[in-house]
Length: 290
Length: 334
Image 1 (cartoon, rainbow over the protein chains, first blue to last red):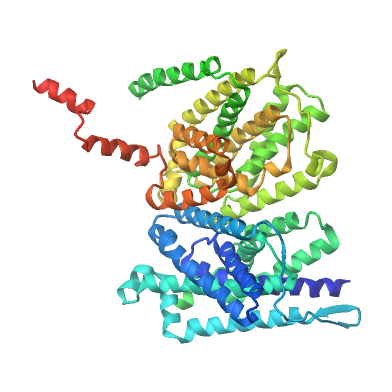
Image 2 (tube, rainbow over the protein chains, first blue to last red; image 1 turned 135 degrees about the vertical axis):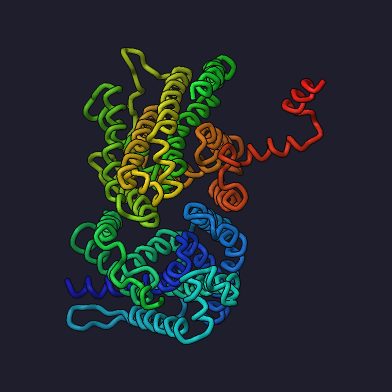
């Protein structure tokens, strides 16, 4: 049974990893608690669902969902985050919470609170090694997560745009003085973060074969946030590792301790972790950047 | 100081006397019920204001404390049959303890972690309320919680409970006002405005954060207890994260850092869903829009410093109407 729990944990964790990558990118660069991340990409996922319902090809549908997430976050950034960017910590956070509620109620208004079946055409097949069951979809998801992680770190390191993003994460005024169009780059970061979130969300829904309102906040923002903090804020490798650890914890708690109280225990473990090692397992190497 | 007090006290007394006369005018049970809920939620909003407004800590888990206070005193009275006063006050003390414990956990942690920990705490509490069947009766909730009785007098009608809530709100208001005007309150404000400067002025920032959490939790706890004895029903679905956010918005709308503002904000957000069914359905949407719009244009709410209220008064000064001040100076000139 132990090995099966490990496999289950890793496959849940890889789903969280996909969401955490997009989250941690924005979080690490702008240091804003993006409460709205999950709910924004949830809108994108529902758009994907609607496009699949309109008999579009899956790839077209996912691209449409990404475009929706991208556009929404551009608008949200312009009207809700940019005006409060320099006004302390409490103000932008509350503004983001407000956006989360607006997005959730938009979904509620259009699609309602029902759970819909979600199928992106990847046939979920299983094979067994010994007594342990593997799912092929889970392996795909883990591979996609790792590939995205490598792709984004290369993008940040090797391209001019990526370097602009890194410099903004260190100091916005200095970046502006160096001639970086700060507002445009930050808006892009938000947009790309939401688009990545939509990819993660779609695979998340494909993994559970269903989609409902709750994928946004409790299963999206919170898990991504916990993964980012466990792994280390601003580190993409940390986001993936943190998500895998989160998945393993969930799997072991529901396997050995209690299914009903799973989330309570996971939160408890998480709070303890934050107290012992607040900088996370793989903190972003700030000294190297400077 | 003394001058300000002597001026503020009669004003407060007048408001209090007017409020005490309300049941003579408002007869309907339904209206009194809404007013009672406004007063009880006001205590919660005041405690949130103490944490967010005066100390600058963002707490998203207040309804967990409302729930802890409610369940604690309900269970004590239902299962152990202790007198109301004991259950009521011990609910406050229990929440103080839990709040101090949570504060101790957050002692060293920065802003982000505190926010996350309070959300986690809210989830943990909700799951316990929902799943600890032998004690909390799970999703069914606790029913037939006895109405409060003090010295043989039972507060079992809406009018009686009106006075109970009014006295409770007044006591809490005065207590919180005393706290915020004292050295303690100034220390909280110093921590909010600049933790580093506060530390250099000899304020032990982590200790004050813990103290702030514990103190506010006391008020939240007794408010939760008073609410559950009024509705006589405790349900785990009343103590969710959404509730916490709604309560937070009460304090924000009225104005962070303004105590009358908290009561005003609570009144608006409790009464509005009762007036309009449509508003009730969209209340979280409305709160979301309100949060964004207010954070951009009026982060200090209606009655906060440089808030909407002051701005409206400021605008009125530019109108060609003879304002009081202008009239007075004009009179002297003549």
